Amino acid sequence: MLRVEARHALGDLPLDVVLRVEPGECLALAGPSGAGKTSILRVAAGLLRPERGLVEANGETWLDTERGIDVPAECRRCGYVFQHYALFPHLSAWQNVAYPLRRLPRADRRARALALLDRFGLADRADARPPTLSGGERQRVAVARALARDPDVLLLDEPLSALDASTRAAAARELGGVLGASDAPTVLVTHDFAEAAQLGDRVGIVDQGRVVQLGTASDLAAAPRSAFVADFTGAVVLTGIARSGDDGLTHVELDGGGTVTTTEHGHGAVAVSIYPWEITIEPPGDEAHGSVQNHLAVEVLSITTVGNRVRLGLSGPQPLVAEITQTSAERLGLHAGAKVTATWKAAATRLVAT
Amino acid sequence: MTRPGWFSALLGVCLAAALTFLTLPVVAIFVDSSPGDLIASLGEPGALDALWLSLRTTAAAIAIILLVGTPAAYLLATRSFRGKAAVVTLIELPLVLPPAVAGIALLAAVGPSGILGGAIEAAGIELSLTTAGVVVALTFVASPFYVRQAMASFAAVDRTLLDASRTLGASEAHGFLRVMIPLAMPGLAAGTALALGRALGEFGATLMFAGSFQGITQTVPLAIYDRFSTDFDSALALSAVLVAVSAAILLSVKLVRGGEALGVVAR
Picture 1 (cartoon, one colour):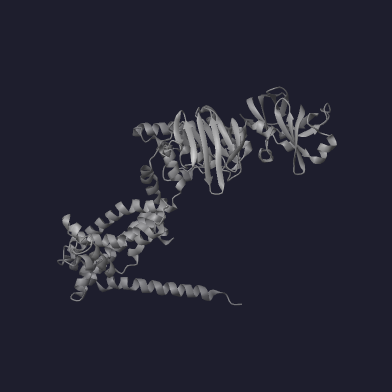
Picture 2: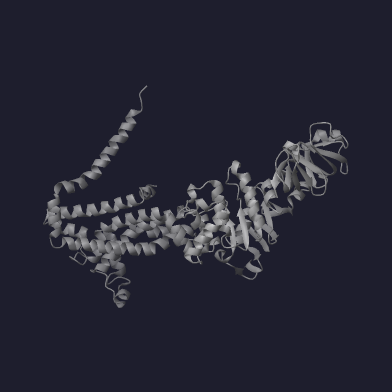
């Protein structure tokens, strides 16, 4: 278990957070840049001392400003993946991974580093220096290095933002697997809500040094507590079990009932993401006339005006959000409690690993 | 419409003038003394003594500068505290001090009747007119060259790497040795070369503070001055040796670092 509480005046930006992360859980902190996300990680790691704060990991107190406890960063067992990875450019990949293993005998150090690199598919890059590695390789070396001494806590600062779009999806899937296999409480920081939804068991939205809302990604998307959160959570996330159909499409049995069809391929436990503006709303019982594949009977929970659009909180088998124009909402005569059908195309339905 | 060729021409003329002015005297040393003269003059009593003394005292001074100057430069580059600018200025002061003033200042501080003279004598150490005194003079004059350069090199290393080192369980001292020093190495080497050159050529402060006794305090520059009025050829030969040694140092730094180190100096 990791507990972080911090109050700190960072120049103009005050930091005021209270977080609890369970073993094996990944808490994703999402928010715009400058919101104070990285500062929270630095407090947990001991790189930033807040004016008042408390950090507890695995039953040990790392920081308690009330009692004057402040364990130095090098004595806190936490794996930290820095935003640009902060690999030592003068050391090879395996020497980077072996850096935290100084207390092991020389031969064991290399063997353990190589085993870790092998786990990340980097065995043949062990002797390469970071400047010669690709972005994806650097990211994996950084994660391997952070995991090298079995940290009590794992902290990741924008682990995917330095990657280009073509490698990010694969790297995200891979990182999701690594985080799933780790039983250390994990805090991951990102400015991308979709990434937070994909990698975090819970997502905290950070704004101006505070966690303004905390919950599962789909809870946040469906029931944003403020216009800021509503705006920040771009996508709807639904979970279910995928299987391939005879028609070459993938059908996902949603947890809680209902089926969703997607043109993407996958099987087993998956998450489905749809952008709210790709969802159209139709009167109930009017489906199956057009080309649209996905239809879910839902009830309107909330109607929030965002500019010239209207954001609808919908309760179906799982909560979802649709975004339609003000004009359409008026034409349909929508109100809280109205029964409607949410529809969207199979091609607009993305599969993400859970 | 005229092409702006005249400006390029002006730049070229200025470079040619600078190059001629700076290299002609050095070239003249070698033109004036044949290799035979050179070797013969080295056999002369005193010449080898001076060369050997110069190398020993310079090596000792550089060792002291590296051991004390490197951590001090690291501190100045990585911490901020009140009065830091003043500290840096004080450390850089010997750079602009005339050598004669440096010699007088050393006498006033650690000479026999200087403010610390009594304490040093009581400790059984004799500095003025001894080889140890030469080392003190060289260290005083040459260390700012190294510390300045080292500070800039440490400051240029990404501080996140030091944070990374700490989160990986390494003490700051370990990060200093294993991360900061290797990454600042090109700059540290350049600073060392500058300090070496300055120490090897030191004249004024050594003469004032340590005197000019053959085999004890008479380094090569002092030996050159000693011969200059009586035996010009021998002075010329020793100068040639000093030029050769200095050039060798400069060149070896350039070769080791592939020119990178001197790029850092130029920055």
